[in-house]
Length: 206
Image 1 (tube, rainbow, N blue to C red):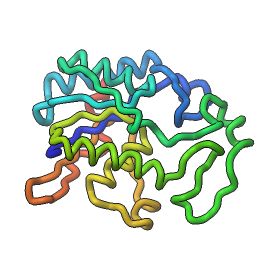
Image 2 (image 1 turned 180 degrees about the vertical axis):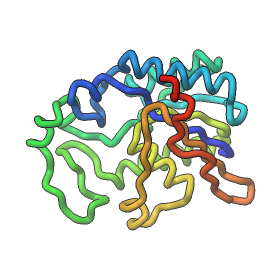
Image 3 (image 1 turned 30 degrees about the vertical axis):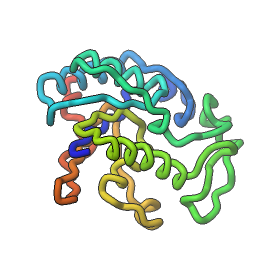
């Protein structure tokens, strides 16, 4: 894996409905589809590297985003459930207010706290995402586009950068906006480069 372009899905319906994200399976809004279309057009005309494949979370908001981008750049989409957002368990599909009443009281260590029953902790999310990326790398997949979700993307960035201590996983966060582009590079000498982070310039006209 030499080049990785990570894209968050476009605006989705749960953003407007006041519902939780996580494993809530909501579709894109009209704006979300326009964001995905603008992203696909930009990558068709200005690819940061030769794009070889698109791998996406199987949740609707991500897979729809990936399909729109794939149609623009001429690539099929491979679905990977391991790229889903943090599993919010019993809170999936609920309103934010309903979910708050079910939230598990916070406890240390924070990395092992699952915010909702039947959900997962941050450490479990990182393990899931890093295993997926390690598998892709071991199969000599390079120059990939990944379409995923905020927290899963944060984990992907930290994995590429080799940041895996408890303190790093707990404290290092990044703003990841809808349909933003994050370009990561792994050099032949093992160097790790953040080429761009949370870049939304291609959406400026939207």
